[in-house]
Image 1 (spheres, rainbow, N blue to C red):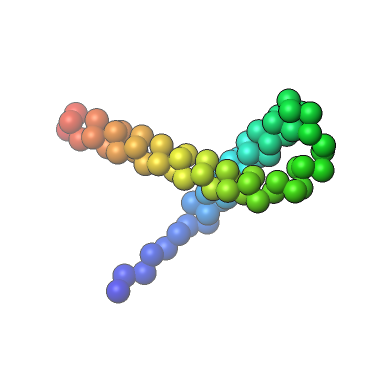
Image 2: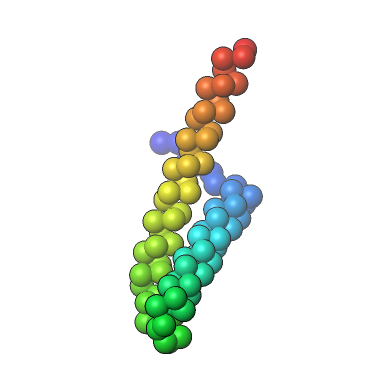
Length: 80
């Protein structure tokens, strides 16, 4: 069986993407709390929802990157 090697650079890239998704989810939650007049303690009590939203954002972002990669590969193969 072939070993799969994930480089250090790829690990850093994926962790950065996950961090950005988490920050976006937290900011979205903070916006919702302020716009609906909730208490600031909801930042901690709704952490589970924020993590689920983070995972959904990460999956959507990853699918978008895969689609862009495939399109670029298709375009570059047509020009050869």
